[in-house]
Picture (cartoon, rainbow, N blue to C red):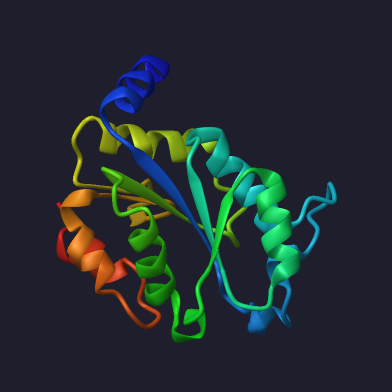
Length: 176
């Protein structure tokens, strides 16, 4: 049933995956998204692969000067965009990505430092958007998790984001 819903949604809705990979990883000492997991796969690449498993169109946002990560994400199958203002925070990076995928009917927004988010979870968020949810997110023990799905109904609010808040305030304001 899930495959049928997604096939139906792909014909009607254009959903884009957004992978936020523009953080400096300064608390980690830098280069966090290139850090190898136990199997040798860079952390950010694993997150990208999971998003690509659920959605064929994924735009990854990187910061200027991280050509290695940019190349790794391209090789994984993502389209990559460099956000010149990434230093201003996640909100700025997200607005940058939304501007480049403005034509989408909705976006599934994932964080590149969360490689353990399973494709089935990402697919469930996309399915919720596909059947008309304006916002979607998984929950665990009563807490909202990642990734988040946001319909095009909120494009203006997403384009206005700046700073480090990302879509958190939007999700909280319009929570059902």
